Picture 1 (cartoon, rainbow, N blue to C red):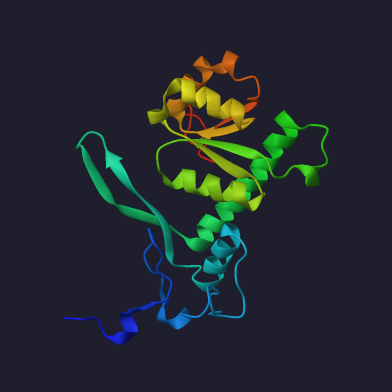
Picture 2 (picture 1 turned 90 degrees about the horizontal axis):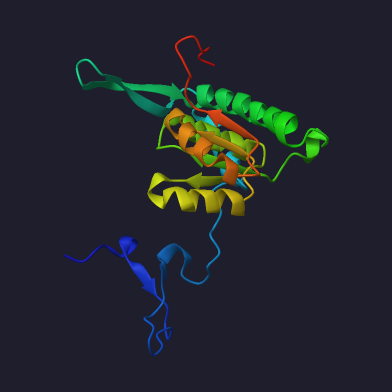
Length: 203
């Protein structure tokens, strides 16, 4: 059964060339690649998109995790934080990142010049990864992600090539980074997403 016209695409006339198919466009936008505005304001970056979401739905669930019971080998129900709760944590973490850069990386720099710097990220997907990533964006830092599948040589190469001076990582990654410490001359600070011990404050 054919789709109704409202769900069909538009084939641009005379757009097919040897070795290339014809051009297909949305029916609502068939004469131009310009996207028609859906509202008066458009977010300019990913952090403004988050801010728009916080304004629109501050009390809606945003990020969730399932607690794991090691004794029973079972996962519990999802526990969520709202957009507003996440946003407040993101701003706090962002402020902390600037403090780390100012204290350990650029002590003589004007606070307003600490921007457009790489932030290394080394962890599996988790709530804290997302919070730290947004926190970096909030301060105009850009994330450089590292993965175990790349291998130690690639991690060393990426960190040096990207001039990573501050690395955010899960606790299990810290020993791996410390083993490479002599090969990472740019690295100045490691921020763990996890507590180092039972007496470590949670925040």
